[in-house]
Image 1 (cartoon, rainbow, N blue to C red):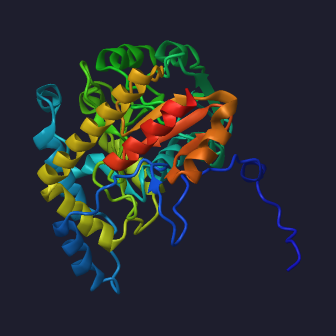
Image 2: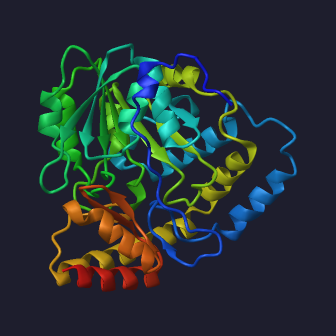
Amino acid sequence: MNDSRVQLRSAITSLPAYVPGARVPVGASAYKVSSNENPYPPLPSVVAAIVDAAAEINRYPDMGNTEIAEALATFLNDTASEKARARGQITSENIVFGTGSVAVLAHILEAVVDQGDEVIFPWRSFEAYPIVVSVAGGTSVPVDLKDTGELDLDAMAAAVTERTRVVLVCTPNNPTGPSVTHSAVMEFLAKVPRDVVVVLDEAYLEFVRMDDALDALAALEAHSNVVVLRTFSKAYGLAGLRVGYAVARPRVAAGIRAAATPFGVNLVAQRAVISSLEARDELFARVDALVAERTRLVEGLRAQGWNIPDSQANFVWLQLGERTISIAAECTARGLLVRPFAGEGIRVSVGEPEATDLFLELAQEWL
């Protein structure tokens, strides 16, 4: 067919391409550690909920996400720190759902960003950031990371101008891995004007094991301009069902909800979320096992002589520069799919112990 003469927005035609993690070809055998997925299969109880829900997919899901909002609010209150609980309870009015945290982020920007408004984010970070900013009509303001792979919150605060509408704080940072401390975030929030939305993007929250870890819900209670962004894709193992959520003050949450796609979270996903929250002890035992495997991977790499960032996520980062693409190709040839960032480095998700063994073997050869 001939090409259309339809004029697309320049913000769309100039978008950088989002590069997903490599997939295992049909019939091939390889370890897939390229997409930060949970390597464990769904729990039997979650599968049963999914199967039961499949018999009802001739009906629309609950557009208001009422059941999952109430279940999640209860979970957040039950697991909140004393500091967060002392300031107030989370209710369903504080919660907004969407098809993955990246979709919820897009709705946040749609709700507050006008043409030309600035959105500050760290870089290198989640590669969807400049894409969703451009689609919303905003102007990207990337701020370099520190040499350690950590966010430079001082530099991000200094980048705020009268045109700034949103600041994105990715913690733990994808793809480098370090997380910000609670103290540092609170100091940062004190520097940011109250009319600027600060999104605390915590896609890998459940894997954090550090002193002075960020208490995002306490930060939200202390600062009305904070929005907490999380997902069920990683720790909960629901990546294929696409459910993310934001927690915000009721007025802000209502604005984000107004921009969200109606019936965005499907019926099967809703039932899986409820079942997952009920099975959280089993799921978090798996998270503990992945954290232990991350420790083995990090310690193994450092013992070999690699200087890698302190990852608090379910992945590690190796800065390889110009060798990145060739090393990623070598991994693929040896049955290990990693995520390369051309000219920068590779991100390796924590997967099966056998995948860790293979990657450590390969990494030793590269030295």
